[in-house]
Length: 146
Length: 146
DNA sequence: GGATTCAGTCAGATTCTCTGACTATTATCG
DNA sequence: CGATAATAGTCAGAGAATCTGACTGAATCC
Image 1: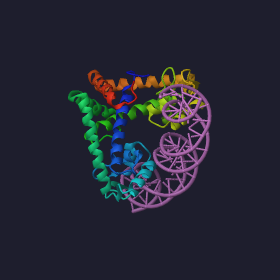
Image 2: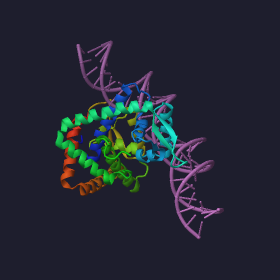
Image 3: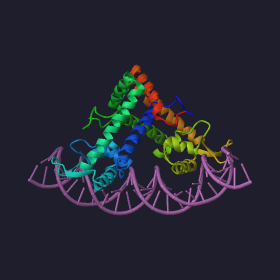
């Protein structure tokens, strides 16, 4: 069985998935039980003032069609709404709706909870180093950052 | 747009996916162009002496049925083989076949390449700290470790 | 030795994702 | 300005991945 020979990428995946799982479970447990993982992955990229569909697709790394499909469901379930983009008549902004804000608040709380557990396990210094290293890494691994 | 307020989990995801993408691209470019991401995720968990289907499913966090479905494809494509588990007549071991070993070798090389890039970007110390923190984190986030 | 648990498979449905083609709007440039 | 190209999104259809539920055969547990 692989032990310490796991590559750094896989190690990140293990932890990430735990976070994702925990958050989705909490949201579902809070009564938002019609949301799926794929929907959540798109949802979490929506910015406070709304985000264009294409941008969501890029960040979630799926095609526009897939993102549209998921946003359709999120919209039908009442988590988001599509509004015209005042800056470009071709585009629409996907915005978080009331229900989505409620669900997002649960999610945010859970993220903080899990991070606190990690903090407790790693200790302050290592947690800071982890965050620092990951942020720097993002400079070369995230084509869509900023 | 979210910038530094991304949670640690999401930061890990961004980097992980970059690694995954790079590795799959390299494997496909090397001529193994019939392998998919889902198959690769299962494949990478196969240990040197073979691994049971159920174990693969657990580690890849899919159902046994899904894992079986993917192993079917990997087997048909010649990347793995199923052999009887000498220790338990109910079970079968999924083992890497010759073609799988070749593909795995490309993958391993690419992982090393990407890690080297990360190392170069972060510097030795930060890279070590990253690996250290992630390994420790695994103690509480990986239910299947060891 | 019978009941229970465990490993894996079969069948069917659902969800996710993609490619390709299309409409409408905006940007570019001679 | 007006033709052409690029961009934002949608529609349609197909394929891949995933799940739930039910089943078989083998081990384990009193």
